[in-house]
Image 1 (cartoon, one colour):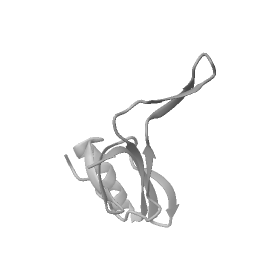
Image 2 (cartoon, helix red, strand yellow):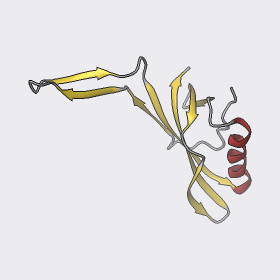
Image 3 (tube, one colour):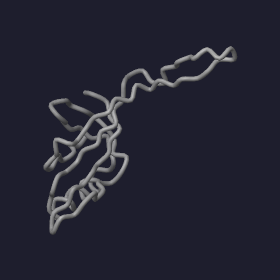
Length: 109
């Protein structure tokens, strides 16, 4: 399992817990909850802040070489294992620098 490059990971990067709880109504209009997964999964948004074209290309090359996952990475001191759900995507460009976002579906390691 390859370690995903955390090139210039911005503090705006975040981890959102997905508990996997579905709510439905029973025939008597009672609200019921069902847990669809055994553990909490996380939607991880990694923001690579103001990286060069070469660094951006290195993130894209990482996927070509290693696939979408699973990959390990550490975000804000927490270790995760997850699969990319997109290629790193350009959010903004300022001159020769790019702000890029990578999305993962992950679990804590």
